[in-house]
Image 1 (spheres, rainbow, N blue to C red):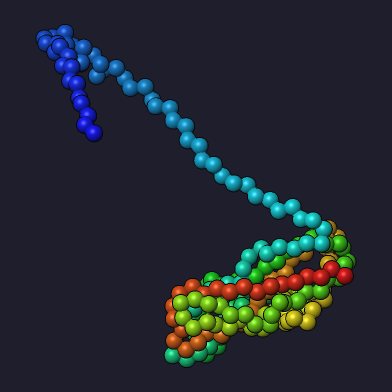
Image 2 (tube, rainbow, N blue to C red; image 1 turned 90 degrees about the vertical axis):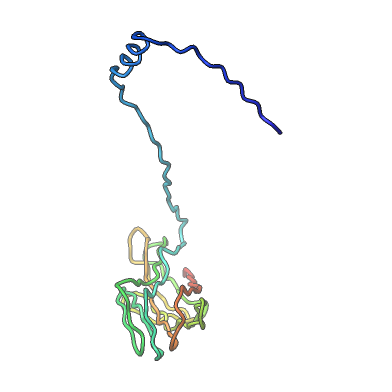
Length: 188
């Protein structure tokens, strides 16, 4: 396909009138440009039905540096992080999983895990997470056998953290590792 162009030369003005017109146009002050910018944002809300709960955030063991020796990283329900063996903790990252929900004041709730251990997969050998612990008063190890707690808020809202221990292999390959665990609540 070809295109055609038509050129129509305009008559050129010469002399002081053309120069004066061009000079006069340059002396006109520029009006400020009015600009308007819009940026959309999202708003979110969670409306709970009675006797429900949801995940607030995931269990995060933070950044770790492996060595030639195996070791562990533990996140306590209170957020403290510790290590054993040949693992070095990098930075201050790491936090327990957090859950929240709505029930009835003074109602008893059974909480349990889908499995006592899970596996994190990534670019290297998978790593095991074990010894899940719920942050209640007092803290309790979670297992497939239900642990009972009572909703103490007059409004019926509650929240709880869950920590655990990660087993890091010797010379663990660097990269992101992830896995899933299931928390089950039964309202009594």
